[in-house]
Image (cartoon, rainbow, N blue to C red; front, side, top):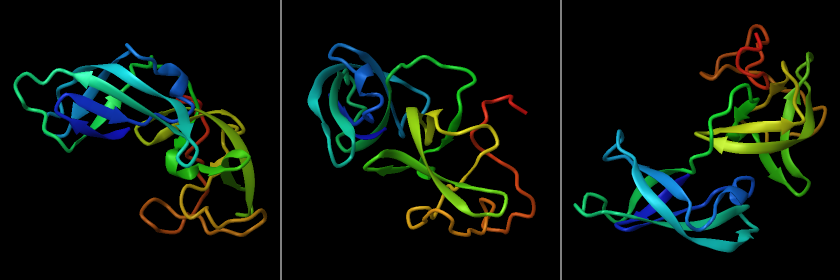
Amino acid sequence: DLVSLDPTEVEFHPTEVDSSRVKVGNEVGVRVAPFPNETFAASVTIVSPTIDPRTRTLRVKAQLANPDGRLRPGLFARVDLGIAKREGVRVIAEEAVLQRADGAVVFLADAENRVQRRVIEVGAHHEGMVEVLRGLAPGDLVVQRGQAGLSDGQLVAPRNADGTSVGTRTPDVAGAPGDG
């Protein structure tokens, strides 16, 4: 999570999915742009009792040492909750997921390039990617951008990341690493 950093305090906002993993006393790692190869240790001091209903995130503060004064107010930081690395999980780009009243939603494109809305269950978020626990299968083609205004059955024109037309369909999501 990108966060605002005070010289001795960092505030961050993990998603509700990760909220159960954050408790007062937890150690977290903090990285800032001016020192990209250095991780500063911080200890969680405050955990909000409620999830923000607008953002579906939890407000958390942690204290960190800054004896040499290198960390300045207003810096943005990345906070690592120290969650264990897991192999073989299905992930998609976080920007592909829409938050709706019935949960996390994505749009899938079929062989005729018509979309279907699908409710999914998400897990951990990390560096712009989100784990998909349920709702997608290997080979599913997920709409990553421009999906906010889509409806079931709507025709789409698949594009590569650079905006060029897709000649052949190559799914780039919903497969665990090494699935082929």
